[in-house]
Image: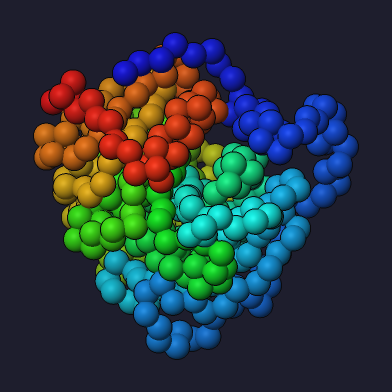
Length: 398
């Protein structure tokens, strides 16, 4: 299905929906005046620290929780930070952090319905954790859903916030962190219900697809499906197609992610000499401002980098649609600059029998579609919690 849409700022549209849901309106000049001079990020605290070695715990087991009221999310949104046990790709017990957002007011029968949020990639340093950002990177959008009566569980992913290596853009690792964030959130906030959906944008869409794949084995009866926002790509398409335009920091992050999964990998096998010094710095701060990190990926990656065994394995495992998924998916993309990548991924899913509703918003880019599709998102989520049959247009996508 395609939708005609006008370019709109997703942040502005989300704020509008938040204002409507909360029954109030803000003038545009109120927000900057209130936030002038305020830090955009918070420093790490002892809350994020974990002992080495980490005391054992089951996946999803809560380590600790902390109420936190300094996010810029508007009235009526409660926030609790969580630290919990997850699992790395090799099965290692790791700690992941995140935040639970939930409404004020009377708790509905069965608890607040849950949306697990899978965020887009933002770097590999501990300081890159969304829960350390004053606006959580998607604060108005997430607060909108809280004001509509949902709890939002937003994992940072292991290694962002906590003292473990982050598996950059590894959809299976990040999906594991999202899965385990849900029971940890319930332990921290008993007002949460048991039924949940997952939603993510950007590379978080790959994480949503991986959650569905993991659920094929788990078959959690309380998992109701997921929404992929801003298209669905895979790492090979991203890097192979556009290394001349992808930023050098993305090349460095890719090497970091490969090294996380395969410790025996030598980063110098795919990174140029120019890239190596920047690579050494990238895990120390979020958003390396060095001149080297502002080169393109084509300048930071060796010409034959994709032939490296570990790089090839990493790209291969991060391709949605290779394993059947469980539960319905709503996949939403724009047309600029999707170039058919989402269509190809959805076609793979449909061929293996997945239940997918694929909608494109004509004229929207990856950022705009987050706001342009908000009415459809809300309707789809409400229908899942109401127990209605999920739509699918897979017959158009074989």
